[in-house]
Image 1 (cartoon, one colour):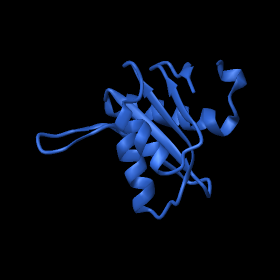
Image 2: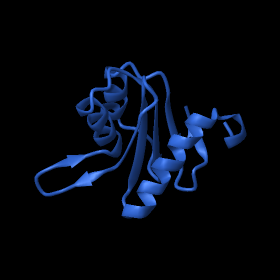
Image 3: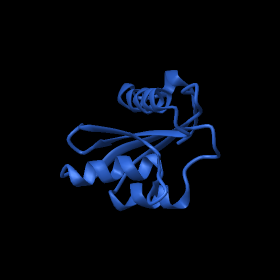
Length: 110
């Protein structure tokens, strides 16, 4: 999949996730879009007492803001991709698409 084949709104969440990752210097950046079009952007959290992936944080932000479902989610990572827990979090919110991109923003899978 190339950037040219992406829906502009899906490309937007990849750009937001990539920007958050770069800004915070973290391993992952994620963004999710809820059923109303609101977007939530996050990076992974790595504290001695709390470890969450970027997608888990973004989904939690959406839920705590009242989102009922997700239209799409994006993960930007140099790693292999979403963990099974990440995929479950998106599915728990009836996520329709989970996009994965490398640090340069190039989509790797959907």
